[in-house]
Picture 1: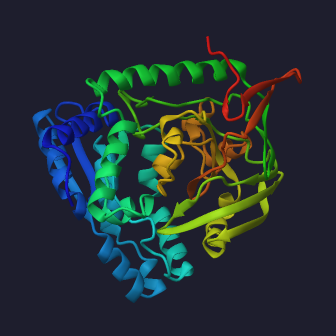
Picture 2: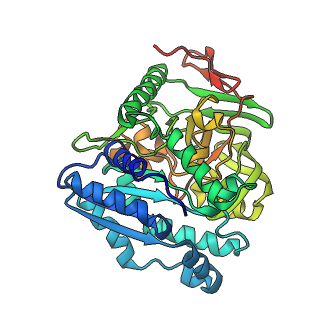
Picture 3: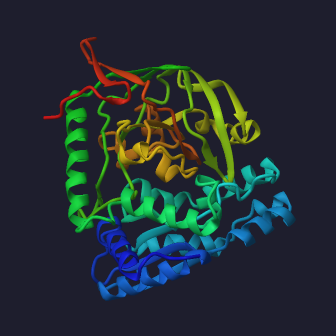
Amino acid sequence: MKMPSHESLEKYAELALSTGVNLQKNQLLMINSTIVGAEFTRIVARKAFEMGAKDVHINWSDDELTRMKYEYADQETLSEVPEWQQQKFTYFAENGAAILSIRSTDPDLLKGIDAGKVAASNKARSEAMATFRNYTMNDRIQWSIVSIPVPAWAQKIFPNETEETAVEKLWKQIFSIVRVDREDPVAAWEEHNQNLITAREYLNKKQYQKLIYKAPGTDLEVSLPKGHVWKGGPAKTVEGGVQFNPNMPTEEVFTAPHKYGVDGTVASTKPLNYGGNVIDNFTLTFKEGKVVDFTAEEGSETLQHLLETDEGSRRLGELALVPHESPISQSGLIFYNTLYDENASCHLALGKAYPNNVEGGSDMSEEELDQNGVNHSLSHVDFMMGSADLDIDGVLEDGTTEAVMRKGSWAITFE
């Protein structure tokens, strides 16, 4: 696989470490990566040590071996997660490590694999990683996700190109979207983060009671919990207040919907890659917060298994607003990668809500979160439902309705 210049890769590595996880001197760093990304991962590791990392631990994975295991192992084996794997992640979280995930996976990796096997494995991993996920979803540690191309992913996006050309095109898109191609990527991200902070502060002052979504195939009302908190762009650790960017790229501001206050139907606008399979052209119908019906032109069985993960997987845990003019949307590409596609489109998430999307949520028990309308689940799966045809209205406490988005763009002038 042909790689970009070493200089460009170093700029990307530095951005991921300084703006992504914001690695601190003498801090542990854990990197999740695949063997296909070994060259870039080594650059990141070296840069981390140069920045003063105490140690760098790499969790390697391999798509071919992952596929092989699903083909030959039985469902019982796929449902087992060794305790030492759980303890490894918990160890790094408890010791204040920064966690950087370098994603590079074939969107069709598990195509043709028994959906029941995939569902059982996903559920087992979610259960096993619950303690670790509590650290990330409550901003108790710094974490970030970035992506690099692999040939299968690149050719999924550019199917008419040779492998080499597709990979080159995808690298160019990634560098543009995450601002690596700017003269000073870190400064460009500081400006971008400030724009997202301005938007979320405006929405936090508004405290809409509900949002009403209208688009072809979508007619949905989503209530918001009292004291809901909009987030987006940079986050800060609970202890120490270290700023970091969980997702690179990111174009969204997001909050928690009320788990019992969602009614109507929503239609997807982009394919959803879930567990190595694609779900496409699907609709979800909600009543009092719960999915009561669904359709899907592709991946219906996979979607059904997702909804059956647990009771909370049939409810929403996130709503995010992304203007249609985001650079990812304007690329005109479907990335078959949630990290990218969710930042091209307004989206919702089935499953667990971020507790800190309500005031004091990080300190609430599961029962208290439920009482405040905050969803709990083993899953958290974003799906895209925004387009240039989407209108969103916000309903204020006094019943006044005002435009939030029109034709996929902000109808608000942020001040």
